[in-house]
Image (cartoon, rainbow, N blue to C red; front, side, top):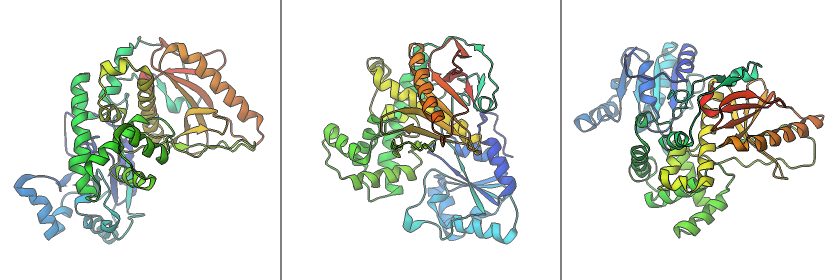
Length: 426
């Protein structure tokens, strides 16, 4: 493997190894600058970088003339930013078919091609997807990992005193986000870096992904999604929000088109709705909770500073929730699970639901301060009672309040876990 003594291990490393062992190729998907290339190089023996600017993008021009330049090399071979030449996908699929070997290629990319440019074949059975996100607090070493998500499902939980976490630290972690390049930056530097990132998405990357979309309007869509971070805002609400704040009249369908492009760029991480199979007449909502891939992107798109967030704790609460749900998403994924939320027609809700592959699930409320833990625990207990009273309901394995500031990870007398986000791990 290609050695890099600066590489910080990622939670998907084991998934990549496991997938290479059973599949001919791996497709690494994730937003730009989340660390896909470094992680892919960590698992390959040779690589070909299609977006390398050397020699007026010589690698890309050579591969267009002869795909062999991209394909030939020691396996596993990484082909980075493969979407710049979609024919690579079909060539890899055909090579895997012909040779019948496992672990031949890693295809890494920060977007998917437009429909008219997509590969002819899906790659099913030959090219297996692996999703990569920005870093969790455990990966960036900002969580000590005392409390394991998997451990909670297995009934392993030990009351543990924690080092006090200051509100100031939570602001810094949320503004910095999980981008590997932001590690070590102070909040002001991180905000500047993310501001550049947001503009690059709209004004440099967007034309290459979909030239029919207007960069300035994409920025306004991004800002509207950021204003509605961690909410159940519909496309209609997004359109209305853009008109109110950016004086931009836009249809719901057009909003959907722009959101679809952001999704293709791996910048949308919506949280689907969970159904505990209740028989009651209460309607269970199906609207996803909206998230950008990392709260730092939402903060930068709105031009928010640490000082501004200090004066607007309501907005910061949504961003803190997004950071917690980003980490839960990552921890659920590496355990084979999925992240959801719950809300019914009577506005009863659960902030986050992690469902494991075997159908077991855990319920989470997210609270910034220790003073709100009681409220979160009560809400969870009420929902648990509602579900257990229904003969068809699937009760949760456990109830947990994730908080920002607590002097311990502990189980309350009512059985609800209290887990500081800086103690959580997979």
